[in-house]
Length: 48
Image (cartoon, rainbow, N blue to C red; front, side):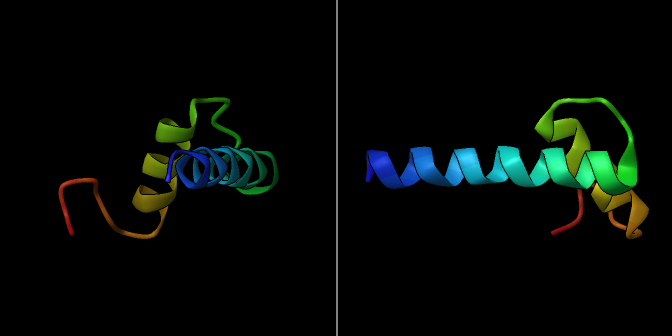
């Protein structure tokens, strides 16, 4: 399971980098990029 978690974490970091480079341009951490993505789509982190 540890390997799967590490692979997933790496994939999410890569995905955040692509989102940021192509669309969001925040220059932030993956957490900040995903928060910006959620905000851009009318969702806040507080919503499920």
